Image (cartoon, helix red, strand yellow):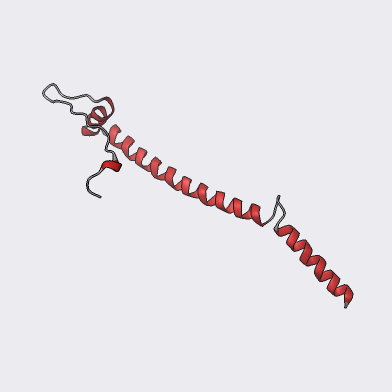
Length: 98
């Protein structure tokens, strides 16, 4: 009976040690799970960005108004009969309406 109780205590101590081991314990598992979740979210964000860039690339390759729009937005070019008006970026902290 004493041998069985001693064996159970040793197994329990080994399990507690393994759970809190700094190299391979519960804390490491939780940290890795958190890093995996963050990496998956970043991956999803990057996939969405790639899809948007692919869409823009296809529009630019198709020509027409997409190229003109890109030139106007990026370079700030205007036609001879137009006037360019540049507005400062919106400051959300000073918005009058929520």
